[in-house]
Amino acid sequence: MSLDVAAIREQFPILKREIDGNPLIYLDNAATTQKPQCVIDALVDYYTQCNSNVHRGAHRLADEATRKFENARDIIKDFINAPKREEVIWTSGTTEGINMIANGLAKLLKPTDEVIVTGMEHHANIVTWQQACKAAGATLHNVPVTDKGELDLDVYVSLLNENTKLVAFPHVSNSLGTVNPIKWMTEQAKKFSAWVLVDGAQGIAHGNVDVQDIGCDFYAFSGHKIYGPMGIGVLWGKEELLADWPVWQTGGEMISTVTLQDATWNVLPYRLEAGTPNVGDAIALGEAIRWFSELDYAEVAAHEKALMARATELAKEFDGLRMIGEAEEKVGAFSFVLDQGHPADIGFLLDRQGIAIRTGDHCAQPLMARFGVPGTARMSFSIYNTIEEVEQFFKALKKVHMMLA
Image (cartoon, rainbow, N blue to C red; front, top):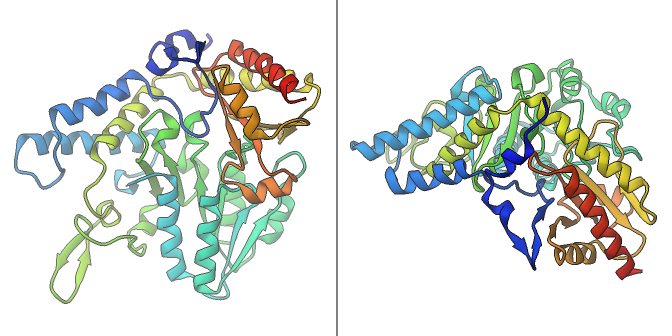
């Protein structure tokens, strides 16, 4: 069987919208995915039926909100195959999750320690480690990117040594769509007992994320990349590390005892969740994951592969178009430049035809520098996109190219 894309599209109200009289073709999914009606309903239901703070209330609303909030944590645990629910930490998104680990790492690093990142990182997964290494006087290494847009794995292996404290890399490149061999990369790092953090922002929405199988120590992702709300995300980490990890923020919820002179910290997950949590969005993210989990992941993967294959085929036939990133394993994101026109102009002119894409450096300036471009135009796919939309995109792009010539 194949994915019933038409039935899926019916569940996304925004896809019925028109832009300047044109049906919306939404191809900016790497930036954020749209939301199915069930997720919207879950958020509205929380605020209209049981809006309350969680965990400490003595009334019905607080009890209902707490049960839904903690049930969402269980949904996440099962989705990523985490060993324990206590290892699922609510964050505002991938960036906060990475910062939580980097902030603690800065206090644990020694000047002789080394950290490894890659040349295809989103800024959130490079600037954080730069600052951690600067604070500790440690050394930061970078794995270069090949002309095809893949990591140079020979260099990666050569950088690993007994001083390597942590390795961080993306599951999927947000700008190139490159799928990295994260399990293999983790195995190599573990030969030297290094900690491994995976930036899962772009990987989570493609299914089959199993943190135990990957073998990493930390996996961070954002809810809005997988059909959930903005402002909510997850950091998963191994209990033996998070239980003693330097606290990220202090305040309510994360404490056990407080005197006027000192304080002690709560147990996981609460020791890393200071303050009032984003209850409604956590519940809605749980609903998004529940909804997505009901899909057949093999069908999802086949559909995404077909979208990428058709886009690649049409791009190779397009005179004046240069693809940026031609990795063997690629999903979601498709970046390119034209011989005529700035990416911002391309995006503007496509928008006038009802097509939404992303342009710019995609928070990956070192990667743009690697390919000698100031930025790219990027279309990115989701399960509700169709082959017809891909073909319509290239028809519209030809009009743009003629206008810019």
